[in-house]
Length: 106
Length: 116
Image (cartoon, rainbow over all chains, first blue to last red; front, top):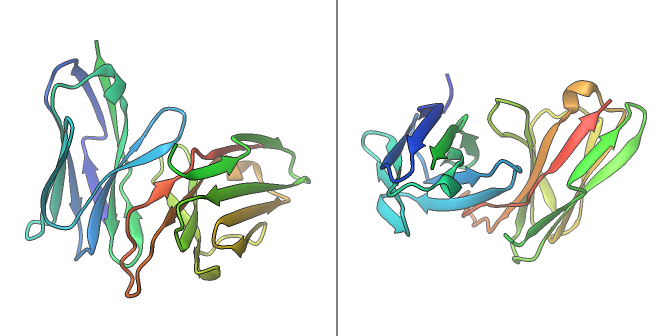
């Protein structure tokens, strides 16, 4: 069983839609990271959080420690948001989810 | 620009070649990582260097040999690779605190390796 489970694996949305990507993890964590990987391969760290909620522009990340669950929300989605979003559990070492491939259609 | 630079971005090599991947970080971080990303698979940790000391080697075959001459530079030396080693190799760095809290990860753009 993976330490980190993401859903959905693939997601297609119309421009402007509200998007949610979910991440569940096993056991405890020090922190949870959300990464964005563009088609060229480069990875950018979007959020690192250990409780509550963080917001950056149109992106919001939440975490529920009791339920071992985190969500990444994108408001007013745009084609440039098309990427793979990866959830990473940080508990003395990193455990990576398989990623959610998002395509936003104009 | 994330502050982590990888070269080359693309590399094609034969199974008998020797080549190296290079990673440089300008963030003052004390931990650097090599990850392998194969198609449709999660990122796999290969090596961790913390304060220039190798602290983790995730059962990586000896045909991959890391080198960390200082806290800003990390190399991955490649020798007699196999076609299944073709993948995207990503370098990352973080400011690792005592006690295992790893801090935010900063990734390079990756080196896409093809082994013929």
